[in-house]
Length: 122
Image (tube, rainbow, N blue to C red; front, side, top):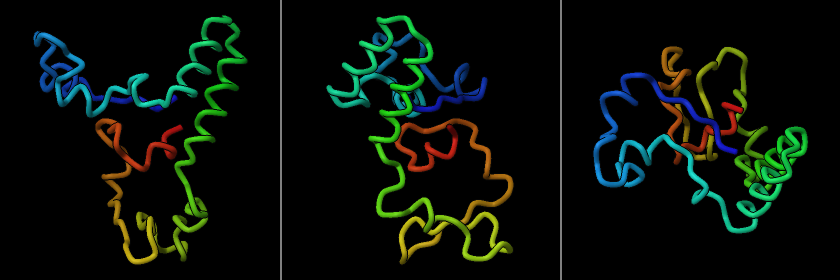
């Protein structure tokens, strides 16, 4: 449901794969999406679709869950767009704030699980 990306350095050097429970490692938790991130209804819907073994249905269910999660509430999909074409790398997440993303920052080394930009990566 959520996008995943992590650089080799992040995976090989930052995550403590030898700890008692890697799922408790803070770096692991930062980038690895887990079923715990879904509410019970979404999780059950996903597990049922997976159990049926129909890839097309699974994709449809994932799309439905993503739409339910609504990463762009209150019209933010339109509001987040640059007001002028010359303002690349500027995002208005909220009316009183501006986020600046330099060209080198448009590709993240990892997709953080808390990031509000996750919908841009799918």
